[in-house]
Image (tube, rainbow, N blue to C red; front, top):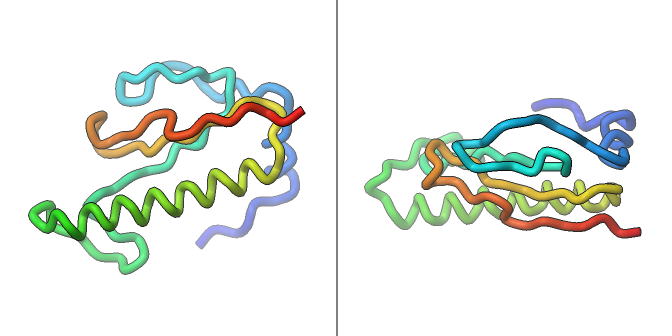
Length: 111
């Protein structure tokens, strides 16, 4: 388990312009002048129970995706609580483009 973010990390979220990268994610264009939270989505791995979920168990896979989505939303909301001064979006990045969800939510800065 990694340590909690330092004050320096938290303050960097509130900078005026992230310019966090360049290029594409799974072939999908990303607006890199904005802030982004890229969350790894693994439909077949349950992080909470540390357990592989076979692809044939559709109900368990769907429940697992919902759980990972809920965790990602909580992380995104914690970033929003820092009141970033730039637009910020979050994405769920799966093993393939078809497994990914781009721009799940985008939030403009509150002035």
